[in-house]
Image (cartoon, rainbow, N blue to C red; front, side):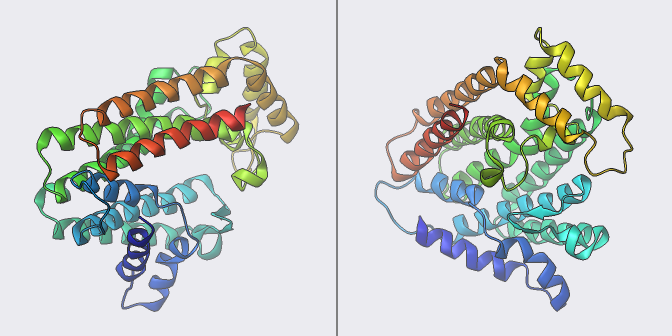
Length: 328
């Protein structure tokens, strides 16, 4: 896999080269900053479920992974504009360094490049990636609609993360199955794994925002609370006996000047985090993540043993081990 991901890295850099050197610089900014490349890794691993022994990924699987990663990167450019983020992956965000307008256009450029690569892989892949970009937008809009909403429901939250996170991981796995020309039932099982893993991934990420250290996160804990994004641990806590105190703290942010970068006073934020940590919302969210991961592993269990299945299953195990250690 290491060699395959090195090919992904090289193709990522090549894919964002433009006739305009300035646009190339902006578009490659977050690529150069690095990343785990989970999505292209899943695309390659899904394609590898057709194999019985380790072998280098086919060119189409690498290109599919690059297309998916470009969609992810483009969404990060846009997210950072909406969040007024100053840092991403330990470097200046694109909007902080070059401004919102250039960041938006560079994000659009990344999405366009992704679409171009997908088109080269066939009509089905192109249509799937286009639909996935639409689902990303739907999930993000749903989250924005419920910003600072103390009555946000679990169902609304799950719909949002299905669109903004899980859909792209599902598509990464599905594209791997398509380009490897796997049977439809096999590809459907991979898609179910990707969707379930994506749901677990976002649940874990939302727990880590409340329990991990700033050194691990690369930003202060409770960033979502500051932004008025109430995730599942917070939703559970608001519905508990401690919800009255938590709602009072979070409600003060509704009176703040919306031009402020942080709408929640740091002391109130820290107290809100502690209230959530003291309740059962964290444990309940980890349990929900575990249930989604189990659903994904059950989908993989339908498939014959292969290096790809082993790798995908290990990713699910690592995800849960990581958050349980952080929350301990």
